[in-house]
Amino acid sequence: MISLTINNKPYQLDIDPNTPLLWVLRDHLDLVGTKFGCGLAQCGACTVHLNGEAIRSCVTKVSRAEGQKVVTIEGLSDTGEHPVQKAWLELDVAQCGYCQTGQIMSAAVLLNQNKNPTDKDIDAAMSGNICRCGTYLRIREAIHLAAEIQQKNG
Image 1 (cartoon, rainbow, N blue to C red):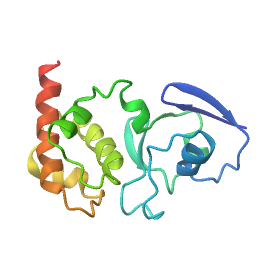
Image 2 (cartoon, rainbow, N blue to C red; image 1 turned 180 degrees about the vertical axis):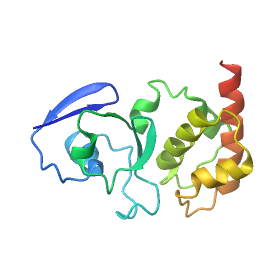
Image 3 (cartoon, rainbow, N blue to C red; image 1 turned 45 degrees about the vertical axis):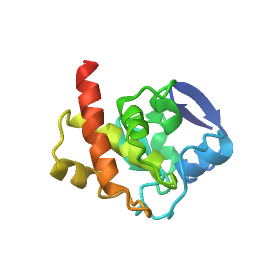
């Protein structure tokens, strides 16, 4: 049995400890907001938070998450009121949308660690997230807006 805390909910799963966290989230817990992109930790579509850090769930064994705090896009905000989510909607960042949950999760970690990132900070933090539609400029603009929203909200 593996004990997990995902989005502040406890789970007990009888599962192979080598199973990638992504497949546990999607196939066993029906948390399908986290996407499968490449399976090689190269695209960032599967990004979730593990103890506040952005990780690639496609290559992270579920055993690594045992006893840790995992947050998926579903747990970022119950109401969609996280500053990054609000900025994404306000600036209509998503085009096809497939990569956006990973982008949002990476951006949330960046803003947790750096309240006022520069373009260079954003580019560095987001470099592991690929957007096939090329919405990088809107992503950067949304992260700046999210930082402003976050600062206003205290």
